Each structure stands twice: as structure tokens, then as C-alpha cells.
Image 1 (tube, one colour):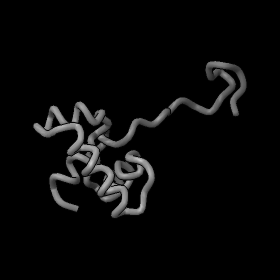
Image 2 (tube, rainbow, N blue to C red; image 1 turned 90 degrees about the vertical axis):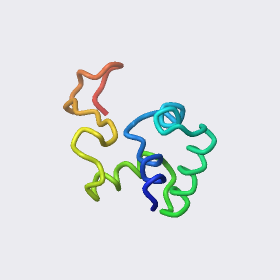
Image 3 (cartoon, rainbow, N blue to C red; image 1 turned 135 degrees about the horizontal axis):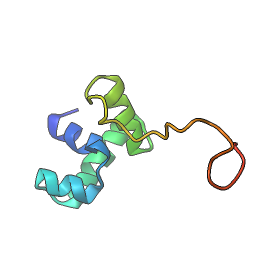
Image 4 (cartoon, rainbow, N blue to C red; image 1 turned 60 degrees about the vertical axis):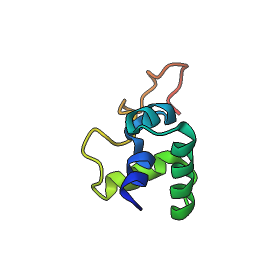
Length: 82
């Protein structure tokens, strides 16, 4: 994966529009890069790219996809735990 594709595909949790603005490219170009990377890696979702990048140490702590760290209890909104 090229450097630009990596910057776009990982995105650090930003939207396509935010990535486009940050990297001075169009939203269509961002979407094309993400689609190409997903196809190349055989993935379905952008978060999967971020997880792979984090596991490969391409992202630093705190730059990976957001994860709900609340304990699995019955205190979740909407009632029961599962």
C-alpha cells in the first residue's frame, strides 16, 4: 500500500470529507483510495483497515478505531446487558 493510500485509508477516525480537507484532495479521491485498499486487502469495512494498521504498528496508541470500553453490565442504556 502506498503512503498516500495508507494516509487516506486509515483516516484516524475522520470522515471522508475531513480526510479530503486534511490531505487537500476531493472526497471522490478519498473514496477511490479507500475502495482500492479494501479490495486489495479483501476487506469490507474501513474500520478493518484501521485495525490492521494498528496491529501492524502503523498507528500509535489512541489513533485506532474507537472502542467502547464500558464494562459489560446491565447498566447500559435500554436495559439488559446482552
